[in-house]
Image 1: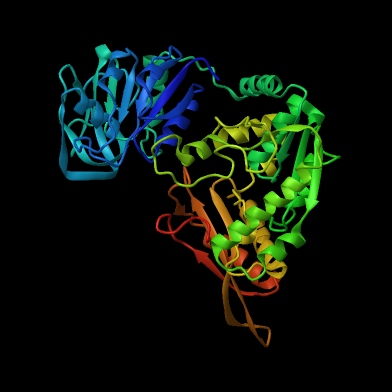
Image 2 (image 1 turned 180 degrees about the vertical axis):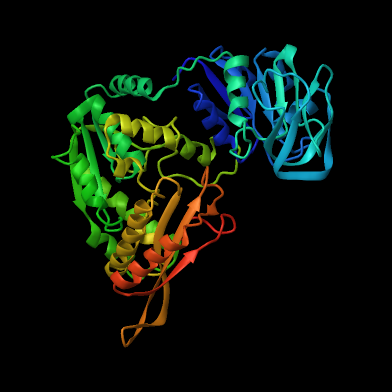
Length: 513
């Protein structure tokens, strides 16, 4: 871990991860901690600055999250964002009131006083606001540095105590010069070193793995996804043939992906490890027979995977460690902060029951997804794995509505392959956060040639998102979409209709089930 770091204190804001990522883009290390973190821990000399996140609460309500005023006695620079700005004002004797006019979305802000935080930012700049309360009276010693038409104190500070606040969100893309503000805080105010770099991370992590594991064996459940693949590649650099990668092919992967994984990690691949492929597709389809409820399918797939994985693990003598591809958002979403505990992750929370390992190896557990991809590149993983589209653990099992059968899997594999192929041809594959084809459980009448058909409808989904907590549908150009649809209905047997899911998250989820 880098010596210098910026701590992001989570007050329930939806952009808490994004703040940490923006700091890391400055090559300074950052981590998210809950607001309940003891002040003594925050006194650590390696912490060069503290950022308070936004949040959905009103600071003047008794049950809202607060933090001890002792934090301001640490003599560390503090930046409050949205709720964090209001919390600074409220805690230090200012007044926060319900806004007569709420602001949500883009807003014009004018810088009215010189500020180190706003250095290099245009006098009139566009920002992203999201608030129903506002600071109506500043604490003693603070001055306003920026205002909008509806928010007099859009930014304020006490420079002598290095306390800064913005009602707007500098971390989101819609704040045009937001990264400059983050950089000003990290470098000019906190004096952080730009020491958080992927190349040095790899060297440090290899040394840590060797120290933790020694000459013992490690087993990795290799799914072929970005996280598990980078985990396997990194550990192999550290311990070579003492790494055993169990690849359970449940028959629910996308077209050609099982072969891609074997080509990369198998005997003819470039990594020094033991690759153990297990074709368990027949067993998985037996377990899924007759199941239509999404949760029942998830449980069946998860339980069967563990059954197969344990059987293979038990064949490897003296394996003492289990490797997992846990990444930082997994840990945050599983409740390390106070932001909504979105979901529990299978690789967060300790060792799986009934498995004999004495410890976990989680080399990526402080990295964000973009950092994981960068590590993968440096380790020599091919682009088709590094930039692989997000894929749920249950695979196509939850991209098929209703019962899962080999025939349905074949249909969705072919349709999804065409979709991905045409998106890549159009040069859109790096622009869309996630895109895939799913199989509805709906059949409808169609005509092919002179014959009546009664076949399935494929559903296409493509979204744009920063954090996967919210998402907007991606507007695929009409000519590209037409080509995709024409190819699917002409080339995929069993499909006579294609639908495009143009729903945001919320109210929908990204996956269909």
